Length: 223
Image 1 (cartoon, rainbow, N blue to C red):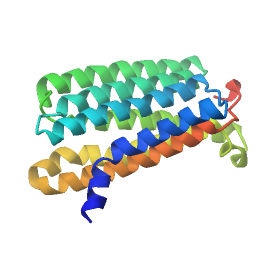
Image 2: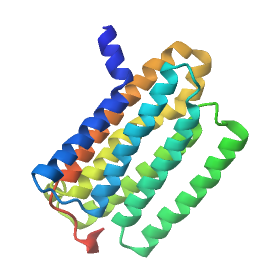
Image 3: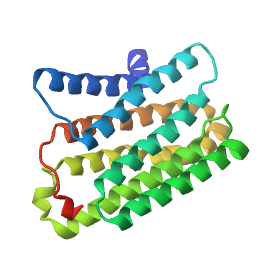
Image 4: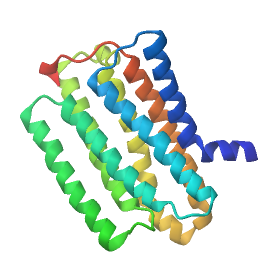
C-alpha cells in the first residue's frame, strides 16, 4: 500500500517522463517527424517533468514549493494558448485565444498579488486556466462535429490533442476549484486529492502521446 501511495505521489514525474522518452525513441529509431503542434504538446510534457521534479524535491526537503506551481500554471496556460492559436485558422478564434490569454494574465497577477501569493497554492489561477483551456478544446470539437463525419474524427491528431486536454484539465478543474476549501476544512484529504490529480495528468500525457504519433490531421479549412 505504501509503495502504491509513493507511486501516486511521483506519478506527475514518472508519467510525463515515460511519454517524453517514448517520443525521443520514436524520433531517433523510427524517424517520427514532429509537427509544430506535436512540439507544443511535447513542451508541456517536458515542463511537467522539470517543474514537478523541482516541486517534489523541495517538498521532500520541507521547503515551500508553491512558487513552482505558480510558474507551472502560467507556463501551461501559455503553452496551450499557443497550441490552440496554432490549431485555429479563423481570425475570430485566434483573437478569442489572444483576448482570453490577456484576461487570464490579468487575473493571474491579481490573484498572485492580492489573494494567493507565492507561498500559497494558486488554486484559483489553476481553476480559471483549466476552464479557459477546456473551453478552447470544446470549441474545437464543436467545429469538427459541424464539418466532419464523426467516424473520421478519432483518426485525427487534433482530436487526440483536444481529448487529452479534456481528460486532464476537465477533470482537474474540480480538483483545483475545491483545493483551497479542502485545505482549510480537511488538510489530510488534500494529499489524496493531489494524487488523483496526478492520475489525470498521467492519463492526459498518454493521450497526448497518441496525438503526437497520429499521422492524420484536419484540413486547415475545417479548423
